[in-house]
Each structure stands twice: as structure tokens, then as C-alpha cells.
Image (cartoon, rainbow, N blue to C red; front, side, top):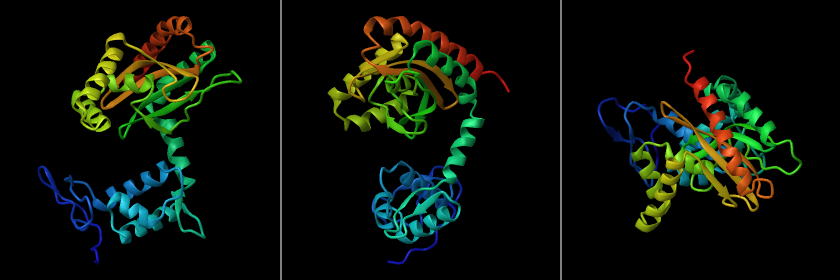
Length: 277
């Protein structure tokens, strides 16, 4: 079936039908005032950026619910701008080198990174463990700044790499700062509306909120330990400061000593982050 070109959405209150690709599986509504081709291009770019393997037009079309012709046009534009690269043999796509420039500009211009980089680096040197500043992006936790441990044996998360919010101390701390509506939606999706699992998970998140910190052991990597404290909220952005290392070094006694150190560091970052420009 032929599809019409992507077009801008009408304006007005509420949401409107998605328009030209309404016949695709799973089509629903999208916010009024957005431009459909831009929405689709962002979805395609995110899909190839977050994939652990090259993605083809057919599977992107199927997974995203966007017509193949639209996906092909979007990928051609992304490839021209260096944001996507296609394998000449398979014509499957991966993220392109121009994305590095965007990431670098975010790091250079981010208020959160600017406010936290010096403190996080100091914490890494002081504790001997990797220190990270993380936030929530598309329902996942993402490290925006990382100061690696000087130790030969160390844990590294990787700046920009998405992880589940539901595994690890950092995820629980970030979840504890989200608005109730957003938190509820994420928890329901994660627990598949299992009331018992939902109640248990919300209890753990509330525990992190009440304590003002969270500790995890071997939740996302064998032999690893994480300690996280909240930095705070700025508009819609929530942030946490964490350290990661092997359990052999981050014993119960050692983590108890480090929690107040991390809290003091997070308070420093909060003050800088909220200072008017």
C-alpha cells in the first residue's frame, strides 16, 4: 500500500491521529504541534544508536511502526549528515561519527556536567573508585559524566550508555526523585501490572527516598557494588552521584563511611547546578 509523505501535525488542544502512517501496526496518537517526519527521524536515530548490532530498513520499519519508504528517506538523510553509516554489503545501519560531535557538545554545554565534573573527579581520587553522575533519559539511567577509578581493577559504566532503572543503586535513587505519575507508569510497565511485584519495588524505591541513599551488590554486574545519593532535581532533570567498585573494596563498613562523603559532594554539586547563569 502506498504511503503519503510525512507532514506536520495540525495544532490545537489534545492529541491528533498520527496521520500518513495511520495504517501501520500499533499506530496511535502523538502530541499536537510536533512534526511527524522529525518525530520519526528521532525514533530511527535512537533505534540505531541504542542497538547492539546494525539495523536494516525492514526491521526498523517493523519495530518502530514507520513505513519503509519513510525509514529509507530518513536513513538517507542521516547518512548524508554523518549521523548514520551503512554497511556496503548488507545495507544495515549503525550510528555515525557525527553523533560524537553532538555528544561532545552536550558534555561541553551541560549545566549538570559543568556543575559536577570537578567534584566527581575529586570523589574518584578520594575513594579510589569510579564516580558517576547520572540522569534519566527515555525511562533509563544514563551516565552523563564519569571519572574512572585509578585502580587496575575497576568498574566503568560508560558515558551515554543506557541501563535499566530497575537494577542498581543509582536506578533506585533516580526513581525515588521522579514525579509520582512518571514513577507509577515506569513501575507498572516494568512489573507488567503484577500488583505484588509493583508493591515490592515501590517499597525499595521508597526506602531509598527515606534513607537518602541506596547500595547495591551484584545487581548489574557479578562482584560489583554501587553506592548512590541524590543530587536533586532541576526542572524535569533528576540527577544522582554514584561510586562503583568491586565488593572486595566496597565492604559494608567502607560503604557506611562513604555515604556521608557522597552526600556532602552531592550537596556541592546541587549548589553549583542551581546557581543562576
